[in-house]
Amino acid sequence: MLNKLIMVFLAITMSSMGAKAAEITLEYRDLTLNANLELAEGQDLAAGVVLILHGMTAHNQMEIIEASQASLLENGYSSLAINLSLDIDNRKGFFDCSWTHTHEADDAVDELAVWVQWLRQKGVKKIVLLGHSRGANQTMIYAVERDEPEITHVVLLAPNTTLNGKRQYEARFGSNFDDNLARVKSMVESGRGDELIEKFDFFFCPKTTISANSFYSYYRYDDRFLAFDRYLPRMPRPTLVIVGTDDDLQPNIPEHVAPYVDGERIRLEEIEDAGHFFRDLNIEEAIEIAIDFIDSAG
Image 1: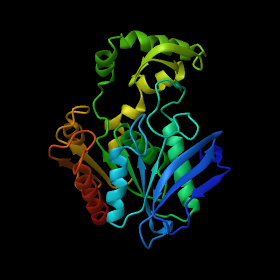
Image 2: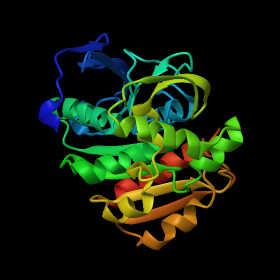
Image 3: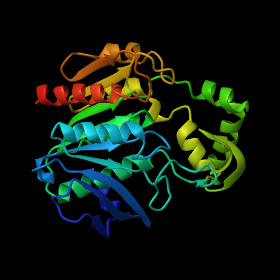
């Protein structure tokens, strides 16, 4: 699929390659993608990079991502934290619910591929993938389905293992999930997936405007991005799952991961009192655990 991904422009806004921080932008499918590069002192890109993906409609400057990059930098690791476009040109910050949702779940896999391609062109031969929340699931799907040789390790922070979308949806909006899903499924199957629906509830956006394809791609019952138990055993590289014991958004992650933990290819670490977003010092502990994993797993 990479041969279909067109990258026609690259801009690096940095005073020199010796700079520690840089915004990277590139063109992809009529959109500008952006990412934040943190280059470890005395290193170039060829030394290796941790490629970081945020959760769902979040961004690369939220606390957990910025803290991850800072902690990695302190430990001598360069990192590239990307922003998914979500079909918005040069998107920054959280997705604004006043915008129209036309993005789809598979877009994340394609955009990860674009950034890996950029790193490859820069001579990077060692890439660690790190994803948070739904971004962890998208990272896992990418690692399994693309299996790129540059990927050496995968770190999943608080991945979605619980199929609680319907429960959360109805609790948040008070609308009938099955009825809404049936409506968009009918539109998609009749070739009307690009049509927009107004005042429709979606993730964290009440009464937003969304295409049928977008809603269906994220909420369909056979969504492979929620098929954690089918993909984790297939991980082609050493994989570390890090969870917080106080994660109320994705409870009981350890019991879903435990059947696949072998201590070598699949590992699990829990951080006491950490929630879904690993606030304060919890993310530093998580990154330290991730670094130990990377070093010990070769």
